[in-house]
Amino acid sequence: MTKRIFRSTCFVAIAVLIACIVLIMGALYSYFSSVQMNQLHMQTALAAQGVNNEGLSYFDGLDISDYRITLVSPDGSVLYDCRADAGTMENHLKREEIQEALKNGEGESRRFSSTLSESSLYCAQKLNDGSVLRLSVAQKSIFTLVLGMSQPICVVLVVAIVLSLYLAYRLSKNIVRPLNELDLDDPLSNNDGYDELSPLLKRIDRQQKQLKRQANEMQKKQDEFTAITESMNEGLILLNPKGTIISINPAAAKLLDAGQFSKGKNILTVNRSLALQEVISDAVAGKSAEKIIELHERHYQVDASPVISDGAVGGIVLLLFDVTEKEDAEQLRREFTANVSHELKTPLHSISGYAEIIKSDLISPEDIKPFASKIYSEAQRMIQLVEDIINLSHLDEGADSMSFEDCDLYLMAQDTVANLSSEADASDITVTLSGDPAVIKGVPHMLSGIIYNLCDNAIKYNRPGGKVNIDIRDLASSAILSVRDTGIGIPPEHQNRIFERFYRVDKSHSKEVGGTGLGLSIVKHAAKIHGAKVSVESTPGEGTCISLEFPK
Ligand code: ADP
Image 1 (tube, rainbow, N blue to C red):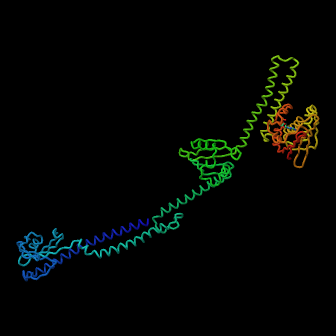
Image 2 (image 1 turned 30 degrees about the horizontal axis):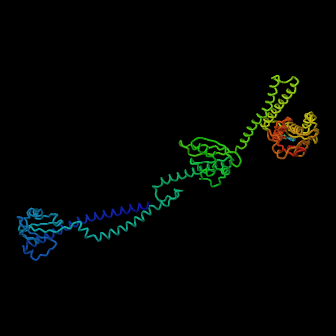
Image 3 (image 1 turned 180 degrees about the vertical axis):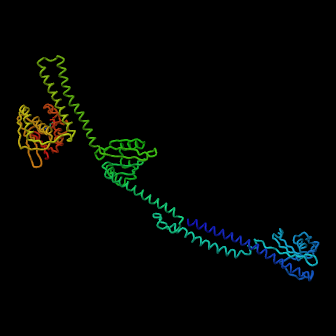
């Protein structure tokens, strides 16, 4: 801007200067012309006086180099000319100044001579004898005038140009200084320069304030967003349509081992999982997609949603959340369904086989009874299995739907011993109960189920003549139930797995003794609902002790 003002000012100053010089030269030229004409009139009058007094002898020895004197007779013939031979000169009667002098006594004219390329001034005066005396002088052209004054003009021009340059420089600096000194962050603070700028500065000030407000709001929103995403357990990633990470929260960075400088990198350089690539390509195509990926030995669901703006995909939002529990439960459910089907199929096949044989009359009437008892025992197994499954599904519903009340474990154990006495006698097992009454908060039928299953197993997996002892201890902060037997024991490698659904150490033995493989899972589940800790001690061939510690 300074340069522009400087250039404009210089241009104006020099243009004005040149115009002034031209105008002044014009005025000078016209002034000099009139002065020259007046002088010529005076010279002519003096010369006419001389010729009137002295006649043609006046011209003798006259040295007038700048002037030309011509004497013309009243008929126009030239009587004398100081520069040419009068005899050879043409008739001058028609000359404007001669005619005027003959008529009025005095005349003047101005003519351009193309041969001399200059104009001449003529002045004529009528003499006493009727002839006319004419003086002429060459008038200097304006070019000659300028040429003659070229030196002072040049000096003036140089001085004026230097002065213009200096003043233009100072002027442009002064004009621009208030603008340079403006504080655009606070434009109204220093507006001493130009009143004309006030509306503009007020508007800039308003816009600055508006921008500041908007920036503050955006910062607030950004802070809120950051606070939310940073405290999220779920991973949140924002990508542009090319897959470059725009934002990634700490949970996602940790899950993908992305590190803190992953912003700006392509997501595929951070994780190359095929499932991730597929959901991203779907989102880029404008479709929402979800897939399960495995990270750090856990399962995560990745939801990819496209962000549509102006009809095109402007970005992608990836949400990663832990679905390990859900996946495990799903897996468990699948396994459970397969196991249940399998477990039910075996007794059904047996029942169907025995019934078919009876139907076909291939057996003697005395064999019908053993067949019927086999059908009965298989049906009992199925009933037991279905009951266990129903129990488990009740337990799966959790503690919310159950009512807790005071339960005495000792009394419950007494009932169980009584209920299982016939089985114990049949297997030649002695069941004893020791300890004290211990009252805890619990669901009665569940606690009975725990004691029953543990005692039932202790009898089932025992030897003839073996012993089972149920011990109840009432401690200050907990109650302990232990069921100890002198049975076959559980090998160490199986001890961790006996609480799994349908897990049996010896499948055929378990089936022989009517086991379903669900008893201990019911125990574990019920114990979990009561907050009890389960522990197993067992030595193969010597016996097993399963204890539960119930908090009070
Ligand atoms: P089941 O209905 O087959 O008894 P459980 O879940 O009650 O199923 O027990 C799982 C497995 O644990 C049993 O098949 C058995 O092999 C083993 N087991 C449980 N209790 C005892 C015990 N007291 N002594 C020896 N083995 C046992």
